[in-house]
Image (cartoon, rainbow, N blue to C red; front, side, top):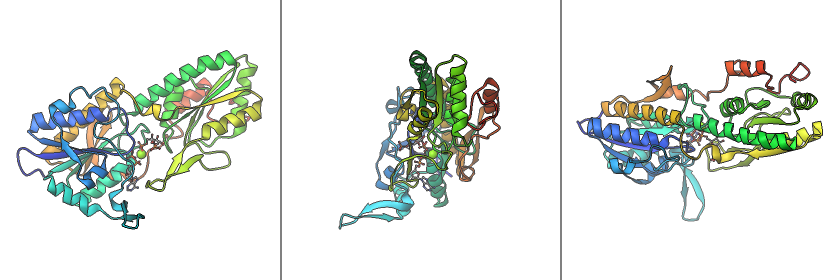
Length: 373
Ligand SMILES: Nc1ncnc2c1ncn2[C@@H]1O[C@H](COP(=O)(O)OP(=O)(O)O)[C@@H](O)[C@H]1O
Ligand SMILES: O=P(O)(O)OC[C@H]1O[C@](O)(COP(=O)(O)O)[C@@H](O)[C@@H]1O
Ligand SMILES: [Mg+2]
């Protein structure tokens, strides 16, 4: 528990960046300073900055005007797990070492009473370990993937969904002009939230999710049926983590510096190739990539990030730690940090939006020969 009236707190952002991180930094800083007379230290590049002692004070001036900015003024990292930290030896070779002791030393050096850790499922693993080392930690969930257990929605996801929706609108006009099948590959790792919500919002005819195994024939049937009805174009939204009918995801490359080395990517091209071969129709692929993560947050994400950030500042300054500030039933609450560790949150196969989309004729690739068209 913070031992005095004017606590010293740190804040870091970890994992992939997402729109709304700056809104959290601003909300934490302003609430902590104004309501508790706190000193707020901004730690650079996630846990890397905490290990290496890189950080500086966040003043009201430093957080002015950042609410609407994408990215994070603190920088982020999805490398540098402190418990498996890359250390380059004198021979130039990289060795992986447990550097968690340096975290504690740095927290003591900076005289921090607590740390707000903003991140996704990976970052929360480290936040929980930091808490168990004896540091007071409050987690704030972020990710465009919306795959975090223990919160109904993460900020960043609404912005990513809006980007997907707009991309599908744009693909639809060119698809209809050229009578083509347009495939849009979207992010989300092993969760299909972005593909589902973005796909429905953009009116996709076929949506392929990691959570619903698909068959090529069902996709071909849908595209051909549309053509037969005079709709000479089709729009397909595929999640990067969708499983091929032969099994497994499409992996772009392996990055051994990451705890999760698999970099997903490439399924869009595979889908487009199969559609051309299986239907004779012309197909094109667009990979939306990091456009989904960049840029200004939507109003919803700014508001959610502000609510969570302010609540997190209340917790850390009042001495409530070991918790994640979550969004539940349209309000904020706290849940044990450990509640984030049980795995990722996936789309339930009976989600009401899947049912609604099916009722409208959207194909999820699992209905071959049974009226998917
Ligand atoms: N299972 C894990 N255990 C410990 N650290 C992890 C784990 N998964 C990821 N990390 C670390 O968390 C950081 C961010 O993880 P990542 O999955 O990329 O982002 P996010 O926090 O957005 O999910 C990385 O530094 C990575 O080393
Ligand atoms: O840019 P990178 O590091 O390859 O990461 C790409 C991944 O990060 C994300 O954009 C966001 O994931 P996290 O929020 O877990 O970091 C995923 O959708 C995507 O698979
Ligand atoms: Mg994640």
